[in-house]
Length: 272
Image 1 (cartoon, rainbow, N blue to C red):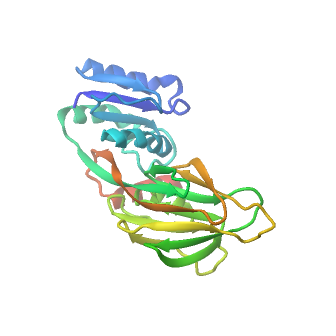
Image 2 (tube, helix red, strand yellow):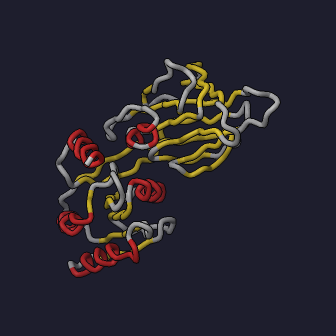
Image 3 (cartoon, rainbow, N blue to C red):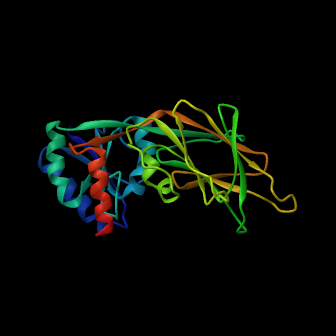
């Protein structure tokens, strides 16, 4: 592996200090490195993308990378960075290992969401339906494979992949799942129900979430975001259908640590 791209969060890599140091290091060792902006098209010859920042930066880069099948490796310059394999002090050793071919690639499932208006988008972490406007609950009817499951009165709903289980879903009380697993997590946000829990279904299931009308005298509406980026809205009677995408995000792994070991390390780091 010799052809690299670097995508950096300019707020976390001030003045692209680390970016430029990595680019010089790669080129001194006979490699090729191109620095890209977050939404810039990735060159077809790229073999690996370094993503400098945190989980959010990596997730934003995943969309374009998954289209071309190019693997990513994250460098954590933020807080926890569950998705990021590397810290700043380990990047040069990692470059050497990648150029020697000493790495593995994990494939992470993604979600595909399609609205009644035929808007279709992909997400590595989650698709979130959330209320807008006045501070009031919304009513969301959830069906799986066309079969009614439950109607939740809540602030919204998170549909997450195992990769996204350590993100917003975890903050809302959802379970943490090994990112290599294939399943879909459905977690209500602040549900007005003592018995409301996360529901985990197979990656083969199709989930439909419909906004129901609670207060006819008001203009009710929810927003739908894909990996944190708002893309569309739903009005009462409209729905979004979510399933596993045929596309996958490829994540490079250098460490032999298991997911549980990494999770324990990250959680202890958050406490310190």
